[in-house]
Every structure is written in C-alpha cells, then in structure tokens.
Amino acid sequence: MHFERLVLLFSYVSGALAAIGPVADLHIVNKQIAPDGFTRSAVLAGSTAEHAQFPGPLIQGSKGSRFLLNVIDSLTDNTMLKSTSIHWHGIFQEGSSWADGPVGVTQCPIAPSHSFLYDFQAPKQAGTFWYHSHLSTQYCDGLRGAFIVYDPMDPHMFRYDIDNESTVITLADWYHTPAPSAGLIPSPDAILINGKGRFPGGPKSPLAVIQVVHGKRYRFRLVSISCDPNFTFSIDGHNMTIIEADGISVQPVTVDSIQIFAGQRYSFVLNANRPINNYWIRSLPNSPPVGFSGGVNSAILRYLLAPAIEPNTTQASNPNLLLETDLHPLMNPGAPGLPFPGGVDQPFNLNITFSQAKFAINGATFVPPTVPVLLQILSGARTAQDLLPPGSVFVLPPNQVVEISIPGGSAGSPHPFHLHGHAFDVVRSAGSSVYNYANPVRRDVVSTGFAGDNVTIRFKTDNPGPWILHCHIDWHLEIGLAIVFAEDVATVATQNPPDAWDQLCPIFNALPPEHPSSVST
Image (cartoon, rainbow, N blue to C red; front, side, top):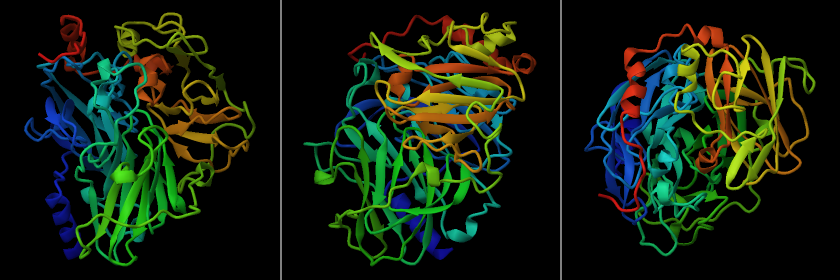
C-alpha cells in the first residue's frame, strides 16, 4: 500500500481534493475560476462553499451504499441561472424516481437560498457514473463531476493494483461565455482534462498531471462530462484494456484509442511498464480547438522520478480504435425480446428533424412542462393524452420489451442519446449494419452515428417512473431533442416522494422569472 499512498500524495500536491460521500453536503456557488488561464464566473459544486471546484468533488460510495446528498443552492450571479437541480447520471433510481433530477420531468428546480436532500440507493449497481445540473444548459457553466460506486467484489479486481480518486480522468469542454448568452450551439474555447487545459493563443496554463509508479497497474475511470463534443482519447506509448462501459463490466478489450461521447464512461487498465518518462495524454474533440499545438487538448502522464517537464512523445501512427461492437457484457449478456428487428412488445422509430432553430422527435419539440411529469402522474394523469408536453410523453406498460430505432444523419450528428432509469442493449451500433441479440454492449449513452446508421436499443420496462430519453449534447436538449417514457404509471402513482419534494414547485413558482443578464450584478 506504500506505493498507493505515494501516488495519492502526488494527487493532493497537484491540487486534487478529497472525495466526498455517500453522505455529504453539496454547496452550489458562483466563483471566479481560470482553468485554462481565462478568468470567468462559473457555477461550481463543493463540499463547502470555500472548496467549490471544477470539476465538482468526486462523490463516492460502495455497492449498496445509501446516498444522502444535500444540495444547497447559494447561487447569486445574474449572468447565469440561479436555480438548480442535480441528475445522478447512470443511477437507475429504482423506487426513487423523484430523485432523478431532470427539471420538468421529475422535479421543479431548487430555488436559490434553498436546499434539497437527494436520498437514494443503487443496490445492484457499481461502476463509473457522474453528476451534473439538469436545468437548461447550466452544467456547461461548470456544475458537473464524477460519481463512483466501488464494488468490493469487482470481478476485474485481479487486473489492477490501484483504483482511487487519483485514477479518475474527466474530459470537459469549456466556454468563456456564460451559457445563457453563448448562443444556440457555441463552440468550446478549450478542452479540460481533470479541470485543466489551454486555449489557442492563451497563456501556458498548468496542465493536469497524472502520476504513476513504474510496474503498477492502474484502473483509470474515464468520464466524459462534455456538453457537446465527443473526444478521441489516447495516451502516447500505452494501450488501454477496457473493463467497464457506463457502469457495466465488460469482457476485456485492449485498444490504443477510445472515442467517448458526452455522458459516456469507460474504465481501462493501464500497465505502467514503459520507460520512466512523461507521456502526452490526448483528448481530441470533434470541434474546435483542433490539434495539440502548445498543449491544447492535452494532459501529462508522469512516471514517478521522471523530470517535471512537458513530454516530447508522439501518437501511434495506426492506432487500434475501440469499436463499440467489440464490447460485450461480462455478466448476463443478451438483449431482451426475440432475435429479429421488431421482435418486441413496444417498437419505436424516432425521426429527428431540425427546423427554425428547434429539434423535434416525430414532430414534437420537447419543452419542459412547468408541472413536472412525475407530479402530473401523482396528481392523477394516466395516459399520453393527459400528460404534458403534448406529443413528447409515451406511456409504457410494465414488464414489456421496448425497442427504439434512431435513424442517423440528422442535423448536428452524431447525437449521443441517454436514457434515464435504465441501461439498454445496443443491438445495432453506429457504423454497423449487424444486429447482435446474443451479447451486445449494455450501456446508458449511445451515439446515433451518421446517415445510413440505424442505431437500435432495447430495454425491459422493469423500473416504474417518468424517464427522459435525450441527446446529451446539452445545447440540443435545450432546443427540444428529448422525449419522456412514463413507465408503469399505476405504480408510479403509488410512490411517495418526501415532503421537501412537494415544496420544490411552490417555492420555485413564487420566484420572479429568471432572465440571466449579460452583465453580472
């Protein structure tokens, strides 16, 4: 354990703060930060107001933990939203759909100067998750962080020596303009790895340094906390053995490069067996900024005893890129339903269109209703005709197999789609025309690819609740790219959210409307 403590010491020296959870306060505050050398006000989370940081503190627990996360809204900056709400991405919220977080679906926002306790368990889940604001585009202003549920019986444990807060890697896009005034679909100014980066033409800001000890094997947990771009991630001179995708253990796959979409997560084992040196870590977005000149889109893998200098390493010339179709669940593989397209109880085809600066799915643009869908159900609504917003809510009976096909190539592709309340089996992946029902990847965010693709997913309706399915490009969600599945509404109607949940809407509705200004007051 001496080596592990040594590596942890280095992580603290480089500025990482200790993890919190499973019981914690999460203070949401405005604070000036300059993660890439450009100073701006941001929306940040911290274990205390003073310790607010980007990314937010790592929240951790163990399989079976009860999470009690008290979100305290202390936001004051009028250039950004001052209410908030947190989604715990990838946590199924079985029996606690009220704690899922998306505004207009499962709750009203938390008003400034108020707090709300999220109380949930995930007894069957372990792996790599994250948390972020689920109000408008607020997480693009900084409210996002990693969330790890450790498994003391992890089936891959024999493959690695070290797995702790020093081995979490977050990839983020960063913007110099507050989200409410940034425009419809802005381009990032910088890419941040573990909250540090540079922008083209900017100062030589410190880059994230990830320390390793020669001869040790590390479980790195790669988390895309992106608002928009996907990233091609690699580490010069090292391959990566993937053992988890989106909170689900997979059969090991060794690659040189990973394309990771907004909201996705991967665990990979890195064997620190290369010569003691510094190696570039690269995270190339499918958007500006381009390339790696001057250290943009980069961080540093530094072996213990290597000099504290920037690397001079080069990328692999013909990297072995991860293919989603090579990922297979370690446990209980196989999609539900019959092994042919449409062999399910409830098939859906989602036609995405873009017109007049709005997205629509099957003709309906999603606008979060002022009365959350969950509250509508608890108030007596039972059918799609009764549930708002019209055309965006689909009622699903319990214990049915659902298949969703999403033709690729719509404006703004590729869209990473995320389903709340479930993982799903990807029976057809982007870039492939093959249908795999035997052992497809099981995950909670999937890229829909490009023209010619027809990404198809399946899940079983075994978790009552109103669950949003949406594009995880936050700018696209903001302009309507979502639907809601109201699953087993009869059971949902018997759920009993806490009294504090009942008060969220009255408190929020008593506020004057939020109109973020372009000048802070």
